[in-house]
Length: 209
Image 1 (cartoon, helix red, strand yellow):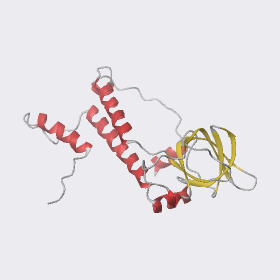
Image 2: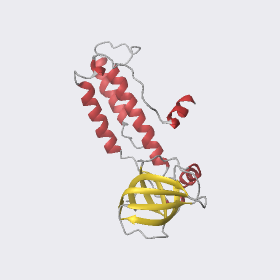
Image 3: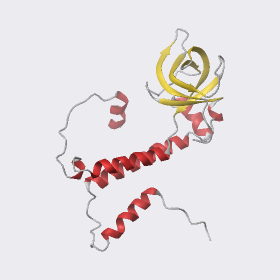
Image 4: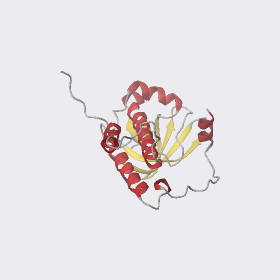
């Protein structure tokens, strides 16, 4: 006999809704409420983010993403302060915007460990990017927390910070609590009025595709 697998969180959520609905002859063709739809959307978004984070633990995927700029590798060329360091990348490719949380490991993309398998060498945020006169791309990492002393000339590979499933779960629990309050428009209050706001260009391009 095969091993009994623990049901996924979404399955547990669906099974938790099933008993109250069955005695009441629930019409399964009926749409979910706004609160259920919002929580379902948050669950699917978290699953997609977790999947993308786990994929970068595959050496082949990490090497491929290094050509697109999601994973970056280079040499530490400057240490302006204890919490700031500059890395000169091997390629002119960087898809990480400013203030993106990143983590760094020594070595090449093929040396990246599985997500959450080991503590990274450093954690920080992308502070700035600059193309030098020698056609090199320099990434400045700010708010850096280095596990051990970084030195000039050290090869390091940066990737987006690994997603923590426990943090995602607590975030969804907080959303559930907020949506359940009477003040939330998802619980039956008036819908917010639409308003215009600035959207990053890459988001517009992704939506258009």
